Length: 372
View (tube, rainbow, N blue to C red):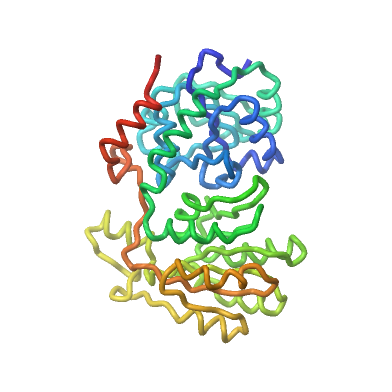
């Protein structure tokens, strides 16, 4: 038996290894059978969508996902390497109340202990989930309901301008869309706030590759792979400049790629580190320190792609017809320069910043903290 039936508050952490194993559909089978909440890593954020979605764990993960992880008593990790971005600097603070079960096809990942008493299964993710689904697992509807209620308590609490922009974009996506994402603040905002209608959509995230500029090439490859079909690309001003010449391919091949540029005119993720860890010594990340951006609308027009500059993400409504036809387009969405990534887990303490309001924290503790 894999599952511990003595558990009252189990979770399954789904990593991208599940998709690599061709087992994405088994995640939904698992939820439908057990009503055990499924959290994801950032790379696998599209594995759990629609009404099943709770969020992803880790440094920039959804606050509620990290809070559920902190209160659960059993973690079943499948196809997730559980690297530093997921478990934090202090391993003992990762899911502190939980027994850990890990399934991974990579024996070298399993050779790295996270908890001294963890159980390890050197198995393909599909075979592991198939074995798990054959077991007699109780229905955890009561725990599922508590987690969803807790999610509702802080819905929108951490939303900054970037999150609100991504949420707005999600409103115009069709069912089961294909979305390719770049690296940087736009990547984290998308992982946190892009919700998909349907359970077969894809969100292509660079993850461990960490290559700025990947968003547009990802979108081109994705479009070609579905017979030059509709693909949405979310990128940042820094990322787009890394491979901006690929706009020529989009135009030449007449690919219906809809490009959203989240443009705060700053290399945001890097400048945050420079501000937080290097006493504000900025270098090549802001206009004053040596970084600038072009007029993306004019650049797109030069390639023969229709484009518009939006002074607010609310104006996306005016271009909904552009987002539904079979021609490429670019929306240059201007954001404030001081847009930040929140929440964030502090490496030194594993606490989530900014702090949660006392009344909301009390409500969530009442929902998740019961260990009776």
